[in-house]
Image 1 (tube, rainbow, N blue to C red):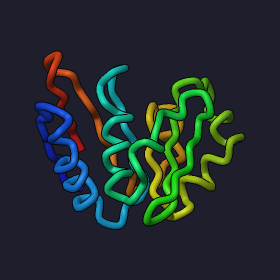
Image 2: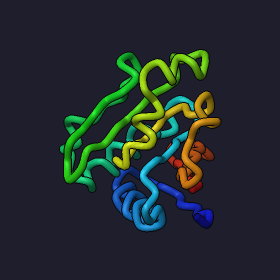
Image 3: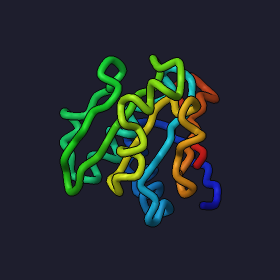
Image 4: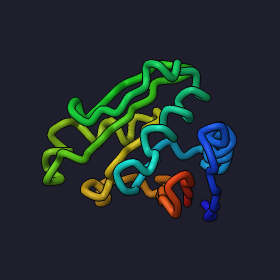
Length: 138
């Protein structure tokens, strides 16, 4: 997928960024999100999941549980791998079954599992160029 740069001035811009992301992803269902703490990874996932039929109030970071499962128009997996230290830990929680399930899968802190990601994974990097601005690169 070709790169796209979107400057987000406020949260009201997120729905358009989320729509663009889903349009450009085509048939891809696995999305990785990288960026510093507070860059907006969970907020962007919340917006995309809302577009896919999940109430925003049901979407939160799975930091302690590692995996959240939502049901909207389809099943959606939301993973936060920040606390994992080794690829084997991800394999133990069934990461490959999730990645290759055919359902949408949004992964925060994906660096550890890069060796097992599908070839068509959409990579998203969030940056904080200014205190009130976020930049997405996908």
